[in-house]
Length: 231
Image (tube, rainbow, N blue to C red; front, side, top):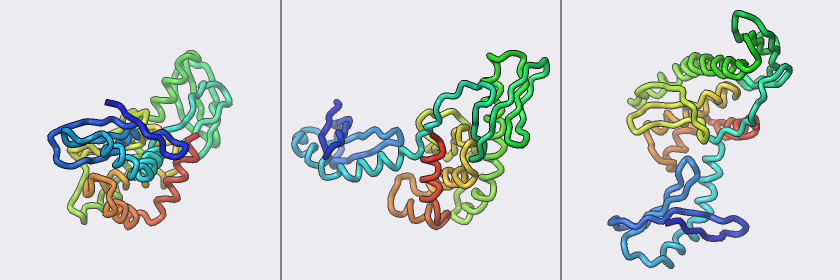
């Protein structure tokens, strides 16, 4: 069932689930959803009190996960429009021709398309191809560095994720959003390191953040840059 409390000027909505568990727990998902699991027959007043006590932490977690939510606005894919690649802005230079291609030259992404309606698909395909190659290149030394912790991802994959920059599956697969190719290299490194840390610490505990800081001391800087640049 869905419930909510008011905490200052912010309303916190959460899903309340009763189960056979013995303790009351609160989880904030990467999608910023709040899930509260309580033992059967727990008075709602006790649940509400617990949520209220943890409200500041809940908001902090939601803000943290917000940095992994792509915010790039919709593009029209027209001549002269700016598009990001590895943190730099490029302008689309579109020409109509029989042999379709996409490449960047100087400060332009040059697109040759048979018709204007195919420009979007051509550019998105170009981004995805570059994402696969570039992510693998950037990840390789980072993965090597984590081998000292006796962990290695089961694979590195590129997959559209409207609400996340990256994820680490229970089986150890690291999945990255192709939109991340638009961010600076250090932002990409930050997301990859974040997911590699999840191979060791599955939740965002202090040990998780200590490891992330050890691997990338200035990660907060690049987290904030990622939040600001992809707008």
